Image (cartoon, rainbow, N blue to C red; front, side, top):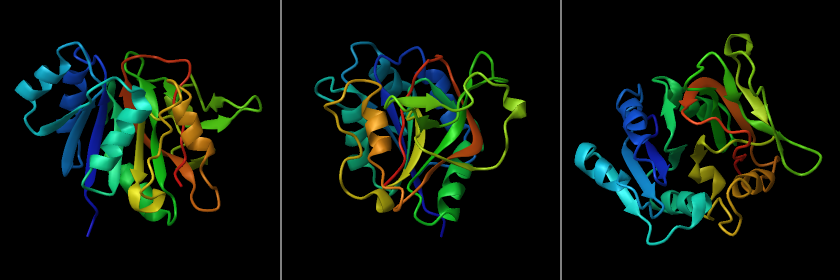
Length: 226
């Protein structure tokens, strides 16, 4: 039996992005068994918008803003399935993306995390990033940033780190412990997640499927699984 997938959207002030993101969720070729929106104490109208127009989404409203690491940990603990696909509120999945990520994890015994190739929404012919490697200064170096998408390989590839704007984690392989250290500030909590991975236990990899992101970023998250 193919394992069901929980989709967990991390939201802070995403009222302008969520209609596009959730329209893509409804168009996904994989039917999600559960869709969670972890709202990190947004002062905008995003929670009311979702509750009015997307009744299939369960909102987990956090009592205070704890940052993306704490929000992801809340979703990780609340999900009813072991396959959990996390996306930021400005990420639109392409129809085949979730299916291919799940297939990539199922095909690689021991792998705990997979991420897609991320494209710019305004320039879908250009890669924003597709995973990352560890830079010698201790931070991450994005793979294939700003390179043409049609020149990138189609094969799944192992990476040293994973940008966490979109990633699928296998909770049964990672374990019960929260994946993120919420004491880190934005952009550091995800790289910490990545470098804490034991490469002997699991590998992370970029799957050759796509998602598009509304906002371009010069740095991002990271994470292999454990």
